[in-house]
Image (cartoon, rainbow over all chains, first blue to last red; front, side):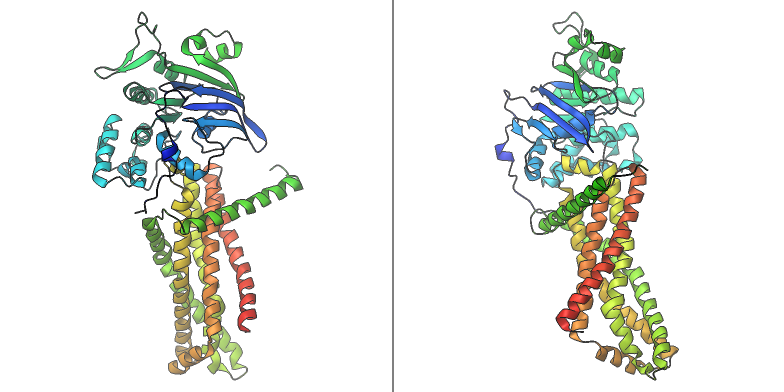
Length: 283
Length: 259
């Protein structure tokens, strides 16, 4: 039960502009309590691309994702999302911008006091979408993550994998133009991790949504790079003798080490990198 | 625990005061601008107001009882035991009703707010809320602030009434006073300024309870241990603030009304 408010940022946005990079970091640095976490980070993500963020624990991957969503502000540098500078944007305008961004948090971050339906429909309720339409869209999103039977459950009743799937449903319900996945397989068993990666792949290949995915599991990153979602058979390996040479050309990798960009490039470039630190990390 | 330099210590506290002031300003601003979360406001009114009713009734009633017995002991030596009603009503309405209600609600609700919002903070639910386009100050702080200010006002009136009733019970059953005399004396002892003073204090106490509780919750770090720490801090800080602000309001009211 809230009063409607006009969306001041919506008219200025153009997330469909295919020329502008969806995400652009330019010389971004941030420190917490004088300890530098990210130093002079620059990269961009084009429309439809998936960028995998790799790196050891504590290297600033999650911080980078929060910066991309405007949840943190950098100490220096610029961040542009859909071509709009967000580093100096007021929070009120950021709320409008975030209507085009979905985010899956590391520990799911579901609202404990709301059931699955209200969690998934949270954004729709905020946007005053009629109840019938909201329910239909929730069911559709839960079907996408194959969890429609859990619609009445509360988060504490769900397993870790189910929470992650509800979190994905909540992120995709508004059909965002950018999805940020913060370690979606972290702390899950290998079978559940594969299910989650398959969902990420499905979203990538069905909706072609631009995405940033943080992971410290190399197998998840390479599964995404070497497999496609096939509606008939689910996850399917990309043919090595095909035009793409066994890897998804829309995938790029960004590796962070001690706050710096250690690598930024394609799957092929990563595999054939001769950098000793990257070789050690991959091995 | 590592030692902090005096400079770092001072900066930390000035930063905390700045953050608290910004939170208060944002919460007040959210009350006067859209969107407003009416369902959350009503839920909080129920939780803070109706939920605190039993402890407020019990605290007010037994404080009134004790006050009657203690004051009668002192008044007997002056042969003024008939003034018990006046003393109980003045003490309850001007001081004990507002302060004790504030402290009880602080113990119950500032702690509740800090632990609830603190748990949301450490599990990234506040970030998720912002990512989903909702301002946590508007959704969580403003409803609690409005509900506390509104409900603490009425809880204080209830505590005053039960305190006077408790005093009446003791005066009639133990001190042997006439009930009509006690109530008449209680009513006659109060003037307009006393009521205004007694009902101004809960407005300040409520503001302190809601803003300190929410601030401690929103600044929580360090997992479940941090939530416990934030809860304790919320109760301690809000209780001390309530007593200090009570002194300032009392002095200001004496300046305005002269007694």
